[in-house]
Image (cartoon, rainbow, N blue to C red; front, top):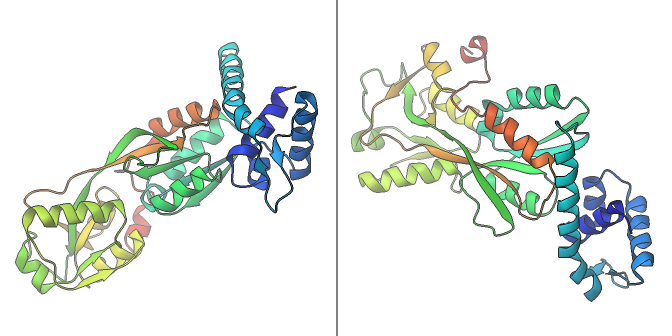
Length: 304
């Protein structure tokens, strides 16, 4: 019995498919299956029932899962303790929301490539609910998502907060200074769809103020939301810092509100049963680079 065999078994047991497990440990499916077969021969037990369309754990396999995790976690800690710095290689699959992609994601990727040049990075941009499911299924190594996960299979750690402010087009609302009920009655509200962290923030503010919006224009991309507001088709909340790039180009301006909009907390999410040292290394780099106030666009893009 070897650690590589245990690793192949563990991820096959906890991912949605052998193909996904093979990607996790950087093997072909046939090589993964061979290692599992070797482990079964060593233990004298069948760990998977292969008589069905999809292999499922046997009783022996179910018993082995937590024991395998303990051994792999201990081995990973020993390797980490014996090395001053991790030299990571393979593929790291990262999931982030659009706001992260628009602000500090390029800086994170540059940092990863600087510290771990042999590590290949794959990125997936999506909404929080989808990212969490891909994380549970083993398709992602970690994700940066707004809000703490309520899924018991996912662990979360706070990494930072994003601030939001109300904005309107400079030319479309030259006399408007503050967001009030009258503004909601005279201009459409441009916003993200239900389910996003920013929309939950918006609903909390509306409920606290007792404000009922009139017409809404719903769009699922921040850049499109900002574009609609810049063209004077409505007003809405936007991520501060990123949106201020458009303020500098005289296309947008901030509006006051009472109370001000709350910040939105973001968390580093990973599978609770993932023992690998790569997660600690990635979490440190994320914590060092996270900055939602930092725009990813330059002044030329902002002036378009």
